[in-house]
Structure formats: C-alpha cells, structure tokens
Image: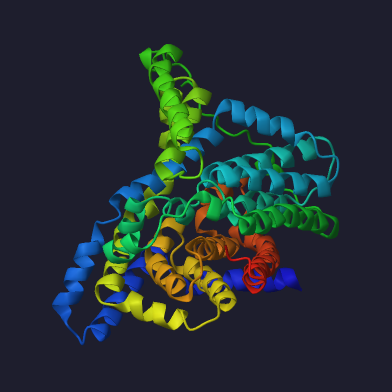
Amino acid sequence: MSRRLAGWVEATFRRVTPDPFVLAILLTAAAWLAGLFATGFDLLAVVDAWRGGLWSLLAFGMQMCLVLVTGHAVASSRPMRRLLERLANEPRSPGSAAALVAAVSMGLGLFNWGLGLVGGALLARAVGASCARRGIRVHYPLLAAGGYAGMLVWHGGFSGSAPLKVTNRADLVELLGPDLGSRLDPVPLQATLLSDLNLVATGGLWILIPLFAAWLARRDSPEQIDDVLTQPLVEVGPTIGRRPTVSDSRWVGLLLALPLAMATARYYWVHGIDRLDPNAVNLTLLTVGLVLHQTPAAYGRAVQDAVSGCAGIILQFPLYAGIMGVASGTGIASRLADWAAGASPAGFLVQTFLSAGFLNLLVPSGGGQWAVQGAVVAEAAERLGVPLGRAVMAVAYGDQWTNMLQPFWALPLLGITGVRAGALVGITFGFLILSGLWLAACLYGFASFGLLG
C-alpha cells in the first residue's frame, strides 16, 4: 500500500510540477505581484528592488557550482572508486547491502553533497553488481535509494549552504541585507553543524535510515537490472590512443597541488573549523581532488563531466537573487517575519522546517532557498529571541528533507544506476516520512525543553 501511495505521489508531483527554471520564473512573477501590493502598486520601486538584487549572488552561485564540481570530481577519482568497489564486496545479505549503501552515502554526503550523491550512486551500482556475482538477490532500486540518502543529511554537513553562509559578517550582509546583516552576529559552526541539536538530529538519521533500509530489504522481493549491472562504467582516465602530453604529468599537477595543500593547512591552522565557509570547503575539496586524480588532464576531465550539473544553478541563482531583492526592498520579508514571529519558539522552528520543506519543492537548491527564505527566518528569529543557529538548522533540515520527494538532484544517480525516478521515489518516500517525524520531533523537543542555546 505504501509503495502504491508513493508511486501515486511521485507521478502526481511530476505531472503538476514544471521544470525548476520555469518554477523560478513563476516565483519571480509572484514576487513582483506581492511587491506591487506591498508598495501600493509602485512599479518603479519593484523594478529597482528586483534589479538591485538580480546580480547580488554571483559569488555565491559560483561557490555552489564549485561545491558540486569538486565533490563530483573526488567521487569519480580512481582511488575513490577502488575503495567503493572494495566496500561493495563486504555485504553478506540483502539487508546488510542496503544498510551499507545508505550509511556510506550519508557519511560522504555529510562531507560534501556532490561526493555523497556520486559516491552513493557508484557504491549502489558496485554493490548490486557484487551481489549479483555472488548470488545474493537484492532489491536493486532499494540500493539506489540508499545511494540517494546522502541528500537527506547533506545540509547538516560540511557543505551545507545555510550554516556556512552565516559564519562571517560579509556573508550575512550579502544574503540578509545591510540592515539585518549588520545587526546579527555571525554564527560559528559550534552553534549549527556542531551543535547538540545537529549531532542528535543528523546522528539519529544516520542510524535510522540504514536500519530502515535493511528492514525494507527483508520485506521487498529481489529486483535486479542485470543489463545495467553487466555494463562497465566509463572511468575518467587517459584517453586511449592519445600520446601523453605535459597535461598528463604528475609533476605538473604537483605545481598546483602543493600550494593548495599549504593554503588548506594554513587556513585550518589559523581559523580552525568553527568559521568554515564555502570558500574553505571548496579549497579543501579542490586539493583532495587534484591529489587523487594526480594529473591536470585527469582532473580536468572529471570537472568537465561534472559541470553539466551546474546549469540549474547558473540559470536560477540570478532569479533567486532578484526575488530576494524584491522581498527585502519592498518590505515583504519584514511583513512575513511579523507573521512568523507570532508563534512560540518551538512552533516557529517546526513551522520553519515545514515551510522550508515545501519551498524546496519549488527552489531545489539549498543555497537558492536560503537566499529566498533566509531574511524572513533570521528576522523572525531575532524578534522571538530564538538563536539564529537553531533557525538556520530548521531551514537546513526542511531543505534536505523533501529531497526525498524532489528528484531534481538525483539525475546523476539515475544515470549511473539506471534506475527509474519512479522506482527511486517509491522508496525514498518512506525515508521522507521517517525523517520528517524525527527532525520535527528534534526541533520541537530541543525548543520545548529549553535547549535553545
């Protein structure tokens, strides 16, 4: 029954939901209409607010592209693939296979969401092929769903857009505006990603989802896609038949890898981890990726393979920035904050979580979502006396939660595993229900028992 319900939800969602770029256009039109009402139909004021915000997130958009590209490049490196293939031979039962893929995908996703997405997909395929060779009849779409589970915890990890964009004053001003951004204090990771709330909420998911996947494996009948599993994946490596050039030299790669490693070590020595921001995350992943690929040519091909995933970010981020400009420039954000501040602290956090989950269906980018929703949430939290770190995590949890229903970022995984989107969402819908109950309970419980610090 639950599988049929999930299939109906997925089919309905795909039928009524347009392309994310179209959604961004429709949200822009809605922001203009709201701005006209808020300003008493002052068209020029809305135009100026929209134009003022339109290009304000170019640096942020580039940061998000690099988060995707650098994580993808690490996942596609030969050492990472060999590690995943070695892990693939460990499961001895369908349940342990499903649990392993989910647990590893979530662990990689906490480090970098692009790494978790691609690494999870590669592991799901490798486990499926290994089990097929050893006569272990697994439910292959369940393995693919486990490979997508990294997207259920990524925003509570070290590539989470919202937590990383509140660690310094410049990013607060960039995304929340000069007035609100200058009033609020920067939020260290100790109050977001490393907080007691996130350790419980994310740590709990890291236990619950693999256990749930193992339980599903015992209930579902085996389903394998043998024609997919028998086809080898194309590795990123030297082009066959091409003579080596200076780009294939490991020594040339070291000319960049060594300075990058020194800069990375210097950053963590001076700043530690508490003020980590997207630039530091990308510096780390760029260093690791270049070291793993060894040569400039191999790393360049890996990046080229990953760049297509940035198309949505490049197209949509200016529109999200324009929506942010209209919301702050016309007073819409302040009015919405007034409404949100009418709840209790516990109710506010749960309400923020649910609204972020809904908004993720329309804005399937964590960075874009924080740009659209951040000012409203931050101002409401300030008025209620709720620590900004807690409010940031409520947005982060909502954004990652409905990824289990929104397969926008699953395209690389679907291509690697060969699983249909309907089969994937039919399983991740169960992840959605379980994780939603857990995350809402954590937010409400920590607020209700006075654990808001």
